[in-house]
Each structure stands twice: as C-alpha cells, then as structure tokens.
Image (cartoon, rainbow, N blue to C red; front, top):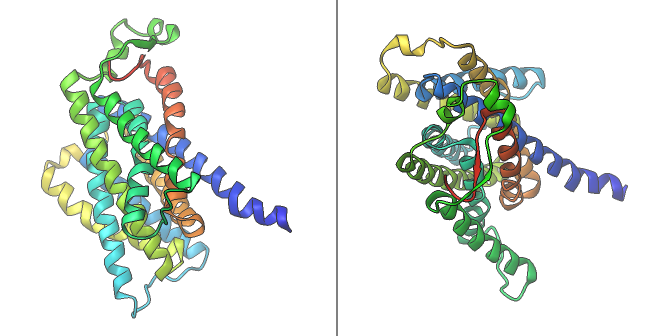
Length: 313
C-alpha cells in the first residue's frame, strides 16, 4: 500500500511532468520551423485554441464530465477568465520570442518559471519560508541562480560549445541551418519577451492552484478555459490579421505544427499541469521546467541544425 501511494503521489506526477516537457520542446521546434516558413503566429494561436476546445469537449463527453460550471461559483469563472487571458497574452509573447530567438533560448529561459513561481507562492502565502530550513535555502539559491542564468543566456555573448551537426550541414546547403538563427538585437528582444511569457505562466500556476481548490474537476475546468481562450483569441487575432488568405496553412509543416500543438501539445500539457497542480501544488510543477533545456539542446541540434553557444551566439 505504501509503495502504491508513493507511486501515485510522486512517481506518476514526476513522470507526467517530464513527458510534458518533452512534448513542449517538440512543439516549440515545430513552431520555430513552421514560422521560418512564413506561418503567422496569431493564426497559429487561434487555431490551437479552437482545436483545444474541441479536444476537451470530446474528453468531457467521453468521461461524462459536466459541461457547466456551478452557478454559485462566480469567483471560479473570473479566475478561469483571468487565467486564459494571461495564457493568451503569454502565448503571443512566447511565439514572437521563439520566432526571434530559438527553442533552446526558450527552454533555457523556462528556468525562470520555478523562480517566479516560488516568489509568487511566497507572496500569496502558498509557500512557507523558514530561512533556517535547508529546503528554503535551496529554493532561494535556485531562484537567484535561475534569474541570473536566464539573463546570462540573453545578454552574454559566449563561445560556441557544440557546432552544427555534420549530417545536418551536409544534407542541405551550407547556409540552411542559419535560417533558424536570429540577429543579436532580435535575440535580446526575443529573450525579454520570453521572460514576460514565463512570468505570466507563473502567475497562471498560482491561479490554477486557486481554481483547483474551488472546483477540482480538471477536464471540465480545462474545457471552459480553452473555450474562453477561443472567445478571447479569435476576435483579437482576426483584428490583428484581417487578411483571410493569411489564415490558410500553405505548408505541410504549418499543418503539422497546428495539429500537434492543438490536439496534443497544448491540450496534453494543460490537462497534466492542472492535474499535477491539484495533486502537488504549483512549486512542484514549476520545478520540472529546467529539464526542458537538455531536451531542447539535443533536439534543436539534431532537427534544426542549431549550434550551441555558452550564452547567446
């Protein structure tokens, strides 16, 4: 019984969070590659929300979950709306930052999420701070290191650590890997946009924790979240991109990116985050973000031909 409880309380959530990081990195690489082929990230964001809503409508029907919120839980609706508004704003900042930077930069700066989440959890009294505790000291040191490391990779121009992979260079023209690289100014702007993104995500984790305390129904809450996100994103994205020809996905890579993120990437990660926050809290979920940097470095080098630098290139 003890082993079964340990598996449910620690092993299963930990495995799920690592799987989320893997799926997120794969999605980031697809989005980066598709945006280099001209995919509009406003269009991409709107499509992902629509597909996410359909996925969770099907899940709610399959698992026979209620598709109405309790009438007496008006603060719940407000929190879900704020959460999705932050999520939509964060996605726009993220995709623009990814377009100007790289998947590796995005994953490296994701180390800010545990730092921001810990600070916000302390501020909202969701995390106790005992300065004599080794656990608290480790969290404080980790927070400082995460913030310092993020700005190093944005601002410090360091030496090349890993060159572009030989097979990647030989399989295409000598300049092809560089289509995924950005100018120095774009790299810094992209990095700062990613910092804003991860601050918004950290706020989102705190709000998710409050939502789960009010109404612990992950599928139902996520369905309404995606539905509200669709209602927010479609008018805004149509206003920013009124040219309907831009809404046609002209490349197969763009179609794959939208389908992957809408049907699997965003939907899977949203549900797993909601479930893990309900089970273990926001700081636990945020602590797994650093694993994405290792995954991103390897995948970006293999699939994008991206050279790896200490700091920015």
